[in-house]
Length: 273
Image 1: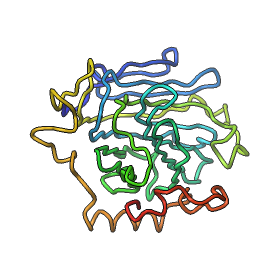
Image 2 (image 1 turned 30 degrees about the vertical axis):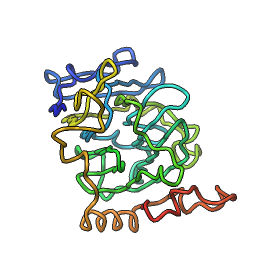
Image 3 (image 1 turned 60 degrees about the horizontal axis):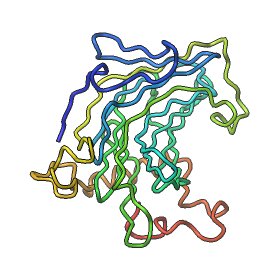
């Protein structure tokens, strides 16, 4: 098992952007920038199969309409798994939208969207993904906002076999990002910059077909780390319900128009929040 207090030089490769992504302060900070020509992005050197991933982000300030900052775990291929945080920019003074999604076996359409209870551009905040065989928990500054439980027992595929890398990018998506594409990116505000620090992965690294957590398989970790069997206790469930009641602005599980044949099975199961 690897618990690494991250250094961006050691943990990540800048993958695109022609110099628009920069690693600073001996690897302590990373910035992504976007201008009219290009955005930028990076990915983890390691692949992970289960873990707790933390990253602190400070989002594009001011008029960020049309921009999207994405931070996610993903495998590759047509039946990929993916766990998404996406931050949809907005006009100055209007709130960012935090967009979350889970793909399993190539199928997504599980969006939940939130406003945040703070200004995510004023300071760094911690965005975490806990991914274990029982559930995927999205958290902001330690407060859980979403849980996607393993519902394989009712036929819903769950991400558990495909190792994933961490990816992040900043790009222009003004065809859809802000008010459905009505608000366009104001290029006079460019370059747009998002900042990253304090990456931490307490996770099973997958390499050459084997997990760092076990010589046999990641399902038989010994000794088992806390996150591997972690579930939301009643206090955490209460905090998550508070966020969902006060800050959730879209939930696929209540969108009956979108699913006229009936809501996805995990939505009606008692196992899923």
